Length: 133
Image: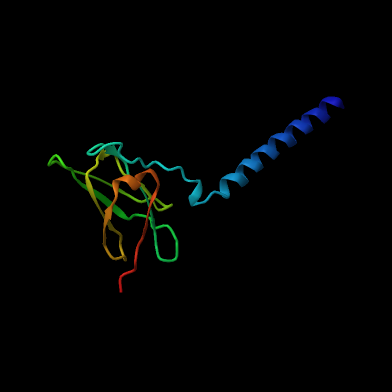
């Protein structure tokens, strides 16, 4: 009888832990997504853009195409690109940062061209897309 009681306690504890983990994972939101951006530490240094793409209602936009163009002070031109996922997140590959221009395109939305300050890349860069008329 004692073995049956202990087995029951172990089974209940196991299911309780699993249920708690499931509840925690479903309550995640945009603020729970880790930042992958990095500002360059020097002129023409390597940095990385972590973009978060939303519509005007604050909903994530999946499939937005992002291209980051970098005009470096030493005359070189670099670019990187990626698409946003179902959470609206697009982390672009690292590149040498100079003067930055971000081009964002998504079906049904107006194309945006945004000047991005390289020093701001330590935080996610939020983009709000406007629907086409």
